Image (cartoon, rainbow, N blue to C red; front, side, top):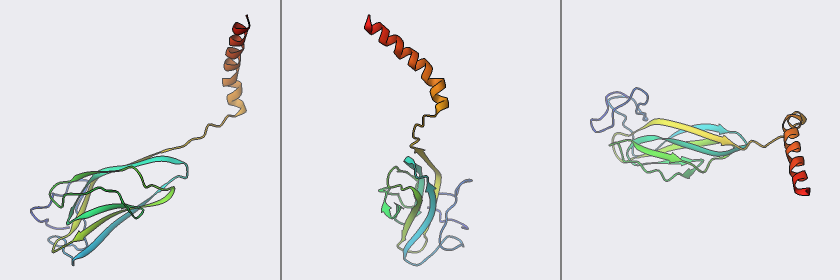
Length: 150
């Protein structure tokens, strides 16, 4: 967007305000504006986490797959940290920033967003691993058994 209102947090080198229009600042009719991104998680993910900072003009909320993440923001004054740690699904996920414009200018800025996940990796025992790993274990158990039998 062009020139920002003096009371908005400035753009950074890595993040800028977005809104429904360009111009001196983004104006738009009263109502809700939804900014959406999607991402995929593998079927074997066990945990996922998204963190970042956000600021909006006016009130806003973050939804993950249509549900609130309970991450309030302070309108246009200062970036607010957010954390999302539940509500993820295997496959396509939808992250929505919903901004309500009550009058005049409206916009959203998201900074330092990072997403991570971990997977459930089942242990698979192959014959090669058994030969390499199993012999010392087998010998150790055999010695233990001999000690007990004395």
